[in-house]
Image 1 (cartoon, helix red, strand yellow):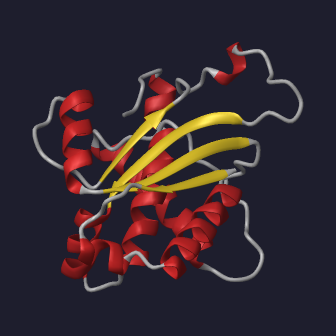
Image 2: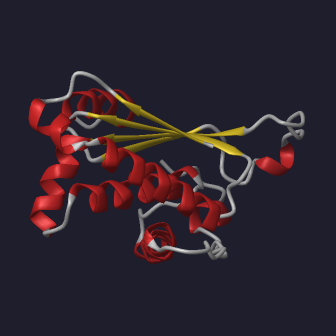
Length: 180
């Protein structure tokens, strides 16, 4: 299950670009990526915010004094699901939160020559991969994570039936290191 939250107030130009259609398509495409990743019994919260909120969160949790495009906050440690008892029937496992700065996404979309929805899907899938324990701290981790992101985005943007995508073993999970 996916919850989509839009923080208010956003800058007027940001709010104008974040139309109902963009929000609906973003939700649909991230849900497709989740199905491709075989994430059916989990809860993800996607929050669309502004630079000031991402700046504050980045400073508080990563010690970096600047805004960023996306932050992910996992609710589980990579590889820890085997040690946890199963949830009662009908309850979804909280996978985590993805928070995106729409302001930064707009700037990045303009710089890359694509629309806001394209960039929001890109950042959402990137955040989803972090929730799954992937990271890009080393060249090998980056290769694995970015490759997985690419096939998930392809499924997210496609039409028709979602194809399941086999998840590669992320280096962070193999090493028992928590990704951020």
